Image (cartoon, rainbow, N blue to C red; front, side, top):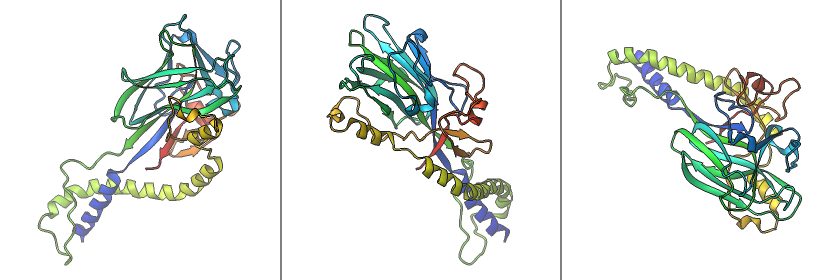
Length: 328
């Protein structure tokens, strides 16, 4: 009987210990990484990037609708070939994918809606996004200007370079960066072999002895108990979480992009990207590790801390941009 229990516990342990989840971490242009709380988007030179909090800054040329902007903040960078030689925005992260989202101005003046960006990953150029204005006094929101879903797991640095030396003026309105991280659970120890199922007669398999069971059962119990607890919690939380997701789901950026460009022929322009994760409002990290949907507007008195500032715990409690599990 003990041997049979040991076999089943091994199976449960294997199922639970190999489980992993992909999560999307959204880092606002201004606030800290809600998962690590130790990284944020940095701007070079800092004096050349202008921050807007809720409303456009006094000396900003762009005037997007803040209600369509992630967490009501954005950074404006205007590159002029005769002025600042380099304008960069960068983020350090650990993950397997990264997505950069911007607001795209379409006017020809105030602001000049020409957009010209290059992207570097770990110091190597990996992509570009160029888009001339179409002369309309409009803005496009949640536009994925760079997508990379094939990164090796580990630490990376994504850099956005605004403009080209000797090129035209370029206006960048950075909204947020999302990266995907694999939150793998500890794997089964390497000295474990594949579980051996008990023979049909119910007897003890000669390949797995009682002494081995005595060593593996405590470990298997620990993993399986954790797995069972996770299943119970998921069964309780999922109905409420699913309901919230349905109520607060927004159109994916690619759909918004298609609707906004309509039939003006912009789909063939350089920089067109698709299949990026949707911006669905903010998600806060709860003390239980579960993901709860929240609104992207902070509650009164709950303004989150800026990147270089102190802890963002208050921001999380107020519904700061956060972590969202990715469906496999």
